[in-house]
Length: 195
Image (tube, rainbow, N blue to C red; front, side, top):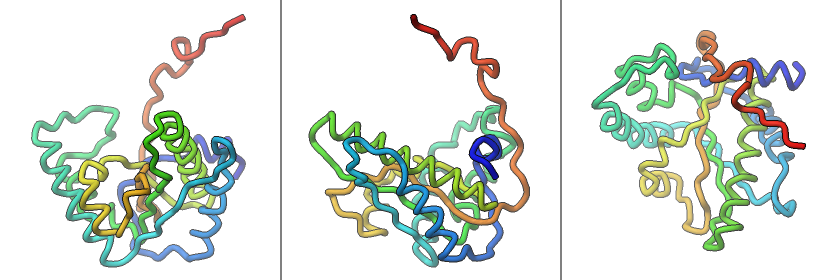
């Protein structure tokens, strides 16, 4: 699959088969993430591959967040066809994915370095998502679990000198998620030519 096909096929997957993803495939995906561009070529990201009971612990934290967050649920078309109950179920088990990857970066008090670290680790996250898609695996870029960052840090023993950037389940999709419409499909409002 070429890069353009991977870009157009990537979807936020919220239901996964329980089939285990091989370590070789995970390593291939993380190698692609590791080749992302980074500010000053610092390559300061780190990847936690979470499996087993730790996913359940993470899910308990995320489920509590989503139960509170969705009390006034607005079934926006941008959320796809997920009902509140399905979203809560997804949160409690990360969609049943056999693995969850947490992307970390260096923490910094310097605003410029802080921003550069987040941007660099976000580029690594995008490479991760596209590599997984190319291998027929599903992902879902998530920042919602960070609403209870303290719990995530405790569950995964993440030290204070690391910033949590994003989380993604990783596994074989159960079904194919619907295409979500692109806002401004023709990009009339998103592109501005400057001469």
